[in-house]
Image (cartoon, rainbow, N blue to C red; front, side, top):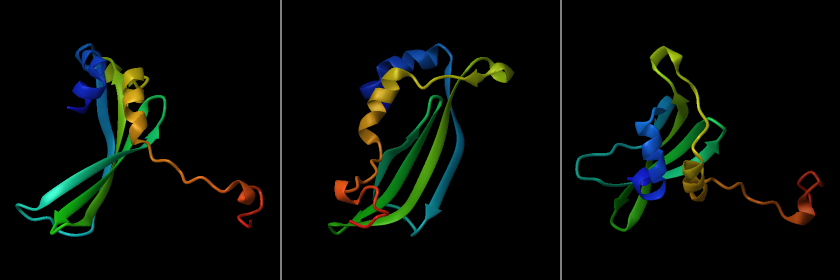
Length: 121
């Protein structure tokens, strides 16, 4: 649904041979989820290079007005194009780049007085 709503031209790219391969995935389980738990999965953009995207995920259980982090994960996706053994890296489509910008993890900014002082203000 994300592509359909935020980057529909990427769907055309996929029909025309763009491939999005998951090349690495990891998940750290912190607590068990059971049937009928209400979960929220929160995605963030961790890294965006010319040909790859790294997503970070938090899996949160919602119960009694509280939230509990039960797992966190990461997924690295490579953009490729070509037939089977002839696939080659492809740039991340521009419309997808723009759609993902709002999900980027932002590093906290340092106070101007602390910059260049080794962390001492």
